[in-house]
Amino acid sequence: MMHNRWLKRIALSLPIVLLAFPVSGAGAKDISLPKRPAAVQSDLVNALENRKSVRDYTTARLNLQDLSAILWAANGVNRDYGRRTAPSAFGNEYIDIYVVSDEGAWRYDASAHRLKAAAPAGLKERLTGQRFVGRASHVLVLVADPGKYPGFFASGEERLRWAHATAGAIAQNVYLMSAARGVGTCLVAGIDEGAIRKGLGLAADAMPLYVMPLGYEER
Picture: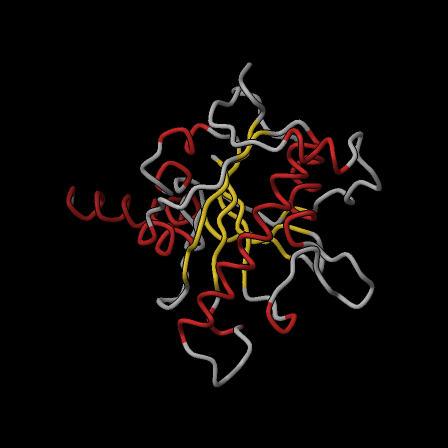
């Protein structure tokens, strides 16, 4: 009799447990970004003069206005017909930008200028073995999507060159807008591809290329 009461108590508690731990997982939700700035208090020459790699960050969180400006500069839409701020082979958009923070991970949807939830918290410290990256407020992850490559007859080596060339252009855009907005960043090639692929739920053939931590510089 005692045994039956105990089983009943467990059965009644199960719905509560399932509600506390939903199948979809806790964490990131879609985020609407503020409209990108019409101008910044810096011209191109000043931004180039101030462009540098920063590895020491304060504990301050990156504000949404700065993140919005940097993402738009990275590879946002800059023309009415959907073209982007970074060049790419045949105009195809085969580089995805993910944003990772302590709260979760998101994919940047340039067309809507918003962040689409991609993964719950827990990935930021596993992106690379370089500890300063995990101390940044946010980290951008540049990922090549082979399914979006142009040129059906192009070789794998040629497509890889396209991916790295476009990622390099995106990285420089990030550097320049970061310099203009007073944000520190650094291009990091030493990454943990397996952790990134698993943490973001990427396809097996997706290629994580670089990460770029973002944070206010420690002075």
